[in-house]
Image 1: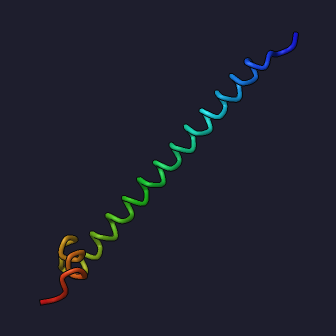
Image 2 (image 1 turned 30 degrees about the horizontal axis):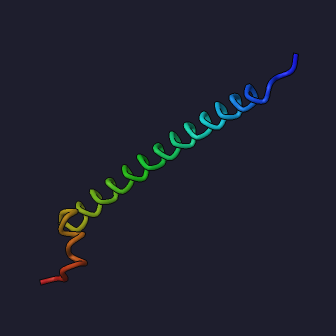
Length: 65
């Protein structure tokens, strides 16, 4: 019994969909970890400087004073 072309195509499409799903999951995990790291760095900087995160961001835009 041989596989038809459409059956092989179905398996290839299913495998490609699974790979894309796994890649999306890994990307979301990495994005979440990066966001958590950025938040912690912001909190640590706030604790050291005494300035809130918003004022840290706007300080570079508007300048001091």
